[in-house]
Length: 204
Image (cartoon, rainbow, N blue to C red; front, side):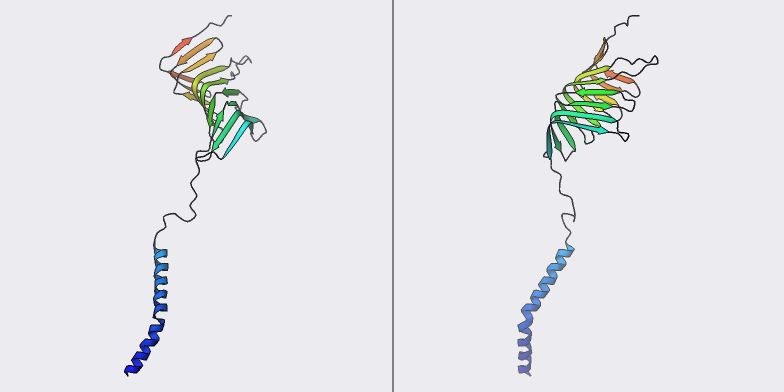
């Protein structure tokens, strides 16, 4: 009887390492399936904050569905940042046309534009000139000009803002203030801070 038991034990002992390895493999597989992943599967890689492309002495135009030009942007140099989808432009010159065909021309030492060009921050010697609106007599008003070290242009809503001093010029009239909000659609202008103005009578 003892001999039979020893023979049986010898048979089991031969396969015991294989059985232990199989159990360890099953335990490792179970742990891998049960442990939550730190990175979700299919998670997108972080977007780089470094420029992904640049342009030199460029010009970009955009058109509406009828083929009319909506805007044109030119500059000496530009870098695109993918993490914020912004364009950093040196020596920009920007033309924007509204639905009525009125033109706005903007320039500065530097500009930051969002991806579709609908929002542009002009920095350093910023100038924005807006064509005058047509009057009832068929003649257009005089163009209105904004000057400052910082001007924030919203092309789609035809608004202009600045938290820094701004000078406003129309013909021989001149106004200045510490900050500005201008809505061309509503024809509303707000100057705040130390506001000064000079009105020159129009000769009849």
